[in-house]
Length: 45
Image (cartoon, rainbow, N blue to C red):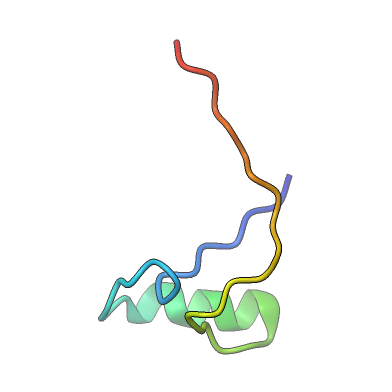
């Protein structure tokens, strides 16, 4: 499974490294708009 971390959608400011990584991975600037994504649940241990 492939995950993409979007700090802007989470309200995180000043995460320049992650914003640039998001741009490289998706070809788009991170925005606060969310797209339809599958919910991933992690089992508790």
